[in-house]
Length: 171
Image (cartoon, rainbow, N blue to C red; front, side):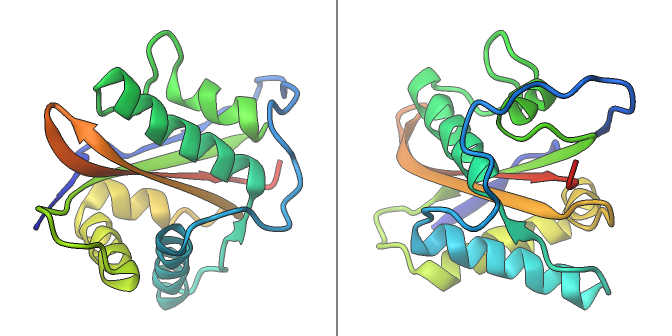
């Protein structure tokens, strides 16, 4: 089993951009997440607490966007923040209009072994925390909301689980 984390982690402050209407549900009361996605968010919040930061609130719209991006990467056979024809920050803001947005991506190569919910989530979050750019994105004080999407399939002919975690400020 092998874990690979994107070297790129992004965060953007956009002070003067007008908010666009949300393309998905804008209610921040939870989301339909699978157990590994929930464990990933829990592990991210644990790291934030360890660094004296508030826990992030699960956001249904951000989770829908993160899940859509993970699926799009599998369908399009690519791994990256920008979707074809759409910048990552615009994609996230289409789901959750916010001044401040960020994203971390990860790839998990299961190697035929069945996924263990907490073990896989912990390994992906540990890898992000070991990467300076991912760590700095996860630990941005202004973030208040989080969404996660994990999709399994084939990328470049290899079995993989792709993770997208989107983060945002409240507004």
